[in-house]
Amino acid sequence: MRDSPTYESGYIQSYDDNNAAKTLAGSFLQRSHSLLEGTLPRVDGLQTILEVGAGSGHHFPYVKAGFSKYVMTDGSPEMLAIAREKFAQQTASGIMVIEQRDATRLDYPDASVDRLIATHVLEHLPNPVNVLREWNRVVRPGGVISIVLPCDPGLLWRLGRHLGPRRNAQRLGLAYDYLQAAEHINSIFNLTVFIRHHFEHITESWYPARVAVPDLNLFYVCHIQTVKS
Image (tube, rainbow, N blue to C red; front, side, top):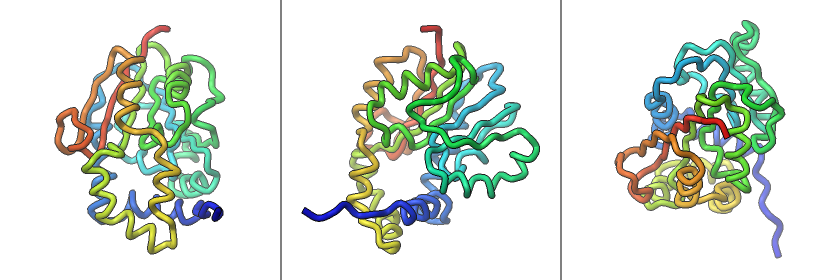
């Protein structure tokens, strides 16, 4: 049996390229970040925002103003090193804190943040129901959990992989299909079932078809308004 391929450094470069590049795939990924902020329901008092699995900070430029503190976290020190360079001005001013944290076990008190953001994160994490429970724990009642998910393994998402991401990864010498199988361990079909079962107050959006059919969309966006347990 052959060993698994190694891809950490190449994956980081590929991730950044796919999110920021002026390509069709890059524009769609950027659209998912914009869509999350554009569909945020009106909720007062979103002063402290925690982003989990932030990577190198692609989502932050899209976040609506009005917060007083932004805590950006990720499990990868390499990703956070890029983020610290990008957002040196924000960290120096005190508006942003960048910390290495495990998105499945957050070292923050109960009800300590007003909004939690997770873009393209939950599909990667084992035991997603436990993760949702942990995210809900740190958000105050009346706060918001904002989530973006890829519609993987929906038909349109599988087709979209051929429009750039696969070629970019292969150019870096990555085993793209193996990487995706190892990274995207939770199906959009299952994740939406979990979210809808465990939370009552949800605002949902789909892109680009805008109908609740994963096979016809690339991204699913939701905002969960938290309540007391």
